[in-house]
Image 1 (cartoon, one colour):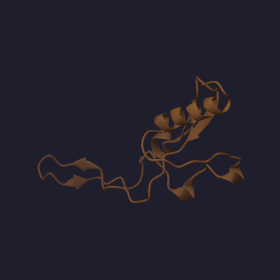
Image 2: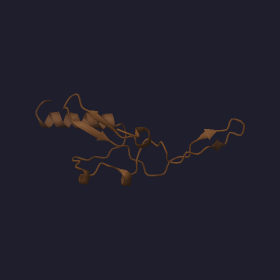
Image 3: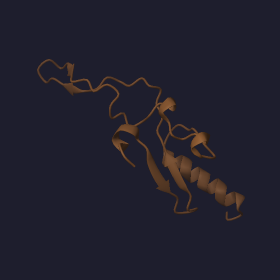
Image 4: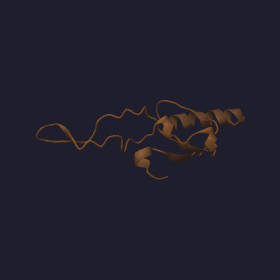
Length: 97
């Protein structure tokens, strides 16, 4: 994976099922202002805009059916919790739980 700091994209392989998950944090395109705080004036300087947000917009997402992804899901919260839930459902469907 490249530019993970900017995109937040990463791969995770489940220890339970062996399934490899491609995770891509999505944001609505509105990033909070961030940069350096001048200690004398307490004002924000050096605004970095949307660089290093650790996420992408839905428009920038690589996770699409056209790119060969199946079982695409959106959720709020930890991707690790969502993956754990999917693993449990997969094991339950295969009669392993």
